[in-house]
Amino acid sequence: MPIKMIVGLQYGDEGKGRATHYEAKNASIVIRATGGSNAGHTVVANGKKYDMHLLPSAIIRPEVLSMIGPGVVADVKVLAEEIQKMRDAGVKVEKDNFVVSERTHVTLPHHKELDRLYEMLKENKVGTTGRGVGPTYEEKTRRTNIRMYDLFLEPNILKEKIAENLKVYNILVEAINKLIEEGIYQEEKFPIITAEEEYEYCMKYKGVIKEFIVDIYPILNKAIEKNELIIIEGAQSFWLDNDHGDYPMTTSSHPNASGTASGAGIGPTLIKEVIGVIKAYTSRVGNGPFITEQDNDIGNSIREWGHEYGTTTGRPRRIGWLDLVMVKHTKNTSGLTSLCVNHLDTIGKLDKILVCIGYKYKNQDINYVPIDKENCKPIYKELKGGWNTQNATTFEELPKEAKDYIQFIEEYTGVPVKYIGVGADEKRTIIREEV
Ligand code: IMP
Image (cartoon, rainbow, N blue to C red; front, side, top):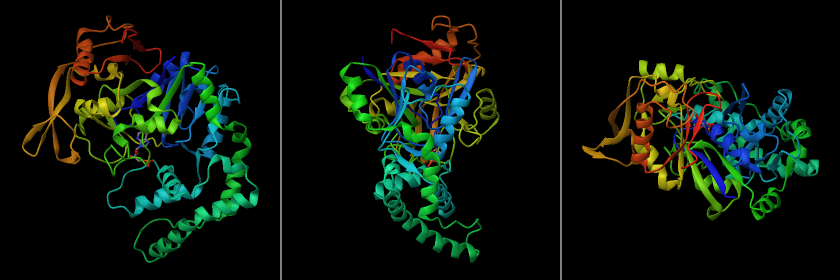
């Protein structure tokens, strides 16, 4: 059985949960590898809608082991509450179907304050989700942050570690609060946070999560040796990647395929399939360049038809045409083997659809993505829309124009489309097994 990975190729929210949940039906393990509670995965299954931020979307399949990998940063409060919420909804979350790596870093209250603080200081705001994810990765890189493993240390040792980690935060806050008092920044003051307070925060939620914290490598090794199917579930997306995306308007992790493999702790040669997920258009939350953006009636209509409001923050998503230059860029940078195209039903409501196939850049026509994307103007190809996918359950049953749209994506990118989302419910997925 191969190891498969599912990654986003645009700006997040492409519907990775759908492909993951589908692939998970034959899997023994689904492992979430990057990001934190900035992610919002919506899975619609059995007529119910589940919103998740940290739990792998396979959690709704009790026979699969859902895993949070070492590359993730997890707020213990969000995790504990999410476990509780899913249990209340009748979803099984027990030791035998969910584990968290002891190496997973912990997001704490001061990380959220830092998120707000950094955004306040910035002229060009990133528009983060405010979940403290960037500051957690920052302190992980600074090598002071605590991990799940640390929750089991002697209280005094854990408090010392937390105090060490808090030093920079509290020094910064004292200085910034003075500037706020002087009226230089019009913002609510930032709290001084004690090690005792963050220790109590950890202990409050440890009760719910402690039974799930394990060394994941023996479990992964056993599954690999037994040739079982493992799915690595990406979070965020390629163009939010801190190395390869629209830096500095990125997230703080590496949601490209290699970063996702690293976050799971699975080497690249073991991964046989990389499924890249896109929407039939583009959406983005947060700031940053968006070459095909439609800040107009077209964008507004797509937003309403596609319910394009952030799962994590509720923010209306920015909407634009499908940018195939950006998608093609990920073919080699993420080593794609197939695509999943979601919202084919949504885009088909328009009679005329534009697809970006190149850019006007410094008086030239180009078909690659330069570092200064903001200097690009889109070159479009017009395709015929106006389809209804309601009765289609196979690719052949799709209306001709819808098939043409998919085939155009395949021809342009050179990557076959294996999954096509034609409705919000996961059952409305067309799967081309031959791909
Ligand atoms: P952060 O990850 O909260 O630091 O936010 C950095 C950027 O990534 C912002 O533009 C966010 O809107 C965006 N972002 C982070 N997570 C997601 C996600 O799961 N979906 C879409 N955008 C995201």
